[in-house]
Length: 147
Image (cartoon, rainbow, N blue to C red; front, side, top):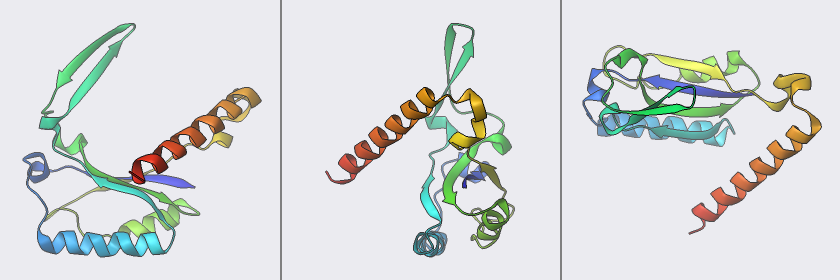
């Protein structure tokens, strides 16, 4: 099972404050531990929403909204993607995480859909197309990493 683990933003992360050297070292150690355990698939921090944009959809119309965005508690400061056996295991890994912000922090855990979750709606043809796309994306990632 894969899970997206979402670090919620706070006022400091939205102001562009960078983590301390101590927190960077603690997070590095935590990430290394997860990588060695085969749990960590991906993990990144994000720039503040002032450097971002949203695209709003209304039927066929698209509207671009530049950041910053006001609801800090709804914004994402960073994320990981874990591969674990259960939600309980994902929770246990998150509980071991260094506090990502000074003071109060919140981390959300969401399961990623797998092909089998879509049942009969994911026809054999659609499943094949999905598998080809995943292979193509993986090949592209290997090319980028091998620059």
